Length: 192
Image (cartoon, rainbow, N blue to C red; front, side, top):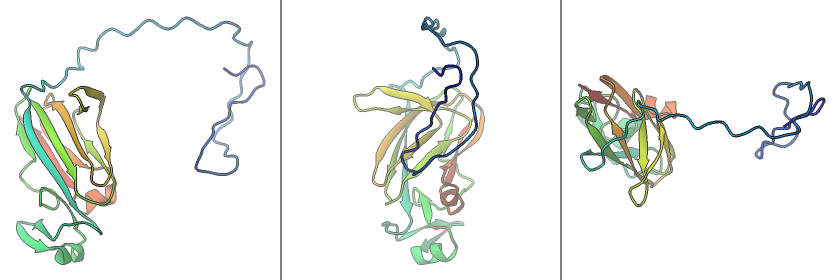
């Protein structure tokens, strides 16, 4: 809590020297007492969770990039060598397929739960982002992490997410490192 005339500092551990973002003048009197904690929010009726016991199992294997083990993948309906993929600037693949196709990763019924196992078989990090719905990471021991729409995966990571197909449409699922998406890391999930 900043008092009258005081400043608040923002520390950035990966930079040297001061960085001024925006001045925040503070006026008034010091808060001599702490305020009571706010009342907890009521349960969110829209925050339904996937039913892990009934969830449809899905798999997504990421491949490609320099230093990867991808030797070939499907691009535009044809199997191509990694050299051909690089020449086409399309060198990232999901389940051996490069880029968006007419076939979604999965077609789910409205209200259906899904459990997606993801393997990052590359040497690069990928921020996997799902449009239209939120998911929770399935943690060791079976618990669920917080609700989110993006999961950062390091090279070699195996992770699992679960989500409820609660929003009809075709929803993009891609690497949020947009150069990776542009070079093939895109698919979709359809909710019908």
